[in-house]
Image (cartoon, rainbow, N blue to C red; front, side):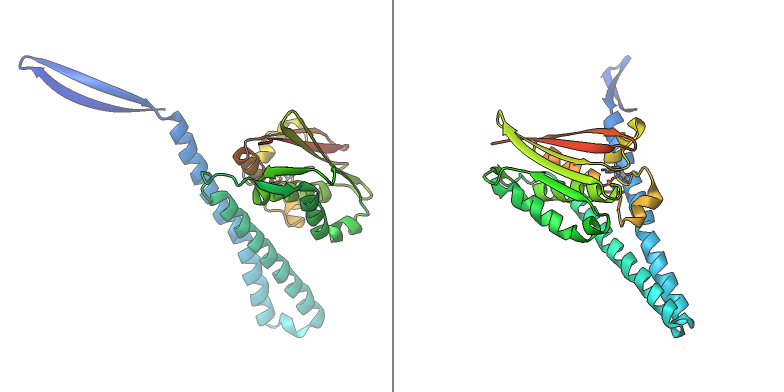
Length: 255
Ligand code: ADP
C-alpha cells in the first residue's frame, strides 16, 4: 500500500507544479495489522479463563458449594484457570517488552539451565513415563544471556514433554563448533505437519487449540522462543514428521 503527499507548488504565476511524494507503507501497515491482531487475540485469550473463573465461582455461590464433590471439582477448575491466566499474562508481558535492550553476555551454565527446566517438568515427565536423555558437556560454559536462553530451553522442553507420547523420549544435545552453539531438543511425539511448521512460531497459533489449552498452553511459547533466539542473534529450525516426532535446532553465535 502507498501513502501520498501532494504538495501544490506555485512555481510560476502561470504554471502550477505538483510535487507528489510516495511512501511504500506496506510494511508499516503489516506491522500495524499484526499489532491489532495481537491485541484482539490477547483480549480473547484473557477472557476465556476469566469467564470460566467467574462462571464456576457464581455457580458455587448459587448453591453448588453444598455438594463436596462439586465444590472440589469447581475449585480445581478455578485454580487451573487462574494458573493459566497468570502464565498468559507473563507470556504477554515477555513479548511486549521492548526488544532493543542489548542481550547480556555472562557465563551461562547450559547444562544447569536444562537441569532446572527438567526439574520443573518432573511431574508430567513421570506421568507420561518419558525417558530424558541429556548430552551436554558439563564443562560447556557459554557467554550468553541466561534469562533469554532459559526461556528458549524451558519453552522447547515444555513442548517436547507435552506433545510427546506415553513412554516417549526427550533428547537434548548441545555442541559447539566454529564459534557457534547448536542446541537440539528432540521428541517422539505427535509431530507437526509441513503446512503448520512455519505458522507455529506465530503468536497464538496452535495446531490443535483444545489440546494446547488442556496442556495449559498459552499459544505463545514458540513466539517467545523465536523472539529470544532473534535477540540473541541466532536461528531456529525444525524437522518434524507427523506421528514420529519433532526436533528443534537452535544455533547461536558464540562471542
Ligand atoms: P502452546 O502453548 O500451544 O504449546 P507454542 O507456541 O509453544 O504454544 O506452540 C504452538 C503450537 O505448535 C502448539 O499448540 C502445537 O500445536 C505445536 N507444537 C509446538 N511444539 C510442538 C512439539 N514439540 N510437537 C508437536 N507440536 C508442537
